[in-house]
Length: 240
Image (cartoon, rainbow, N blue to C red; front, side, top):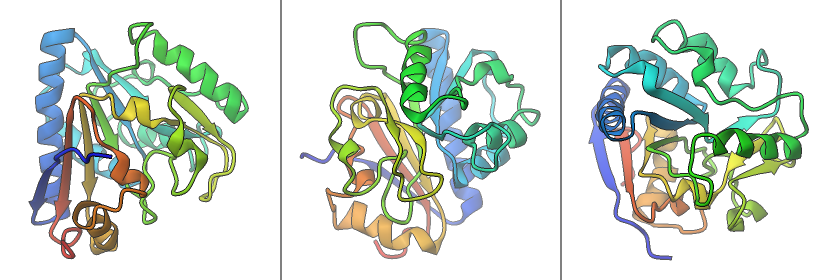
């Protein structure tokens, strides 16, 4: 697999990661809204919730044009601590003028398999019917094992080629039941961004960006006709 070139931005601190990330988001949102009258962005959980809830209140954008999807989601009740949407609802709605209706959410009462199929139908409203969804932006996380979305190392879903959203019932990380975007959709995005901070990420950053370990899920984020941006602080980049 040919690895796409990525923009790697190394900044001083976590606060600078947040600033740089939100500068990128502001710019992409304006371009998307000018062109398409909508900004379609995929969210991940983990540290991104903190980065976005701290940084997004400072950007200039037309919030009413945003539509927020999930790169992956845990099939748990919205009020569960494990719900990524629940986290954004608690930490982002109210700090920026987004409404719950702007989030395209899973149905947590379904099985993972049914939730994945239902989510494809919900996404299909926002994308042309006969082609892969093309997000303006996917905000991706990277786990300590190199997973991204809910695409885990050595998992059969790494080889999924047709389904947009797949169920996961055997996640090595709890909770076991999830849905996730698949690589065909991830790599069809106009822009994918990883924002990472802290020395705990340094080893995996090195394995992906320096050693180019192609088996790691995060290494397989290679937009076929888009941009890949990494934003990290000096601690995360310390083994580069």
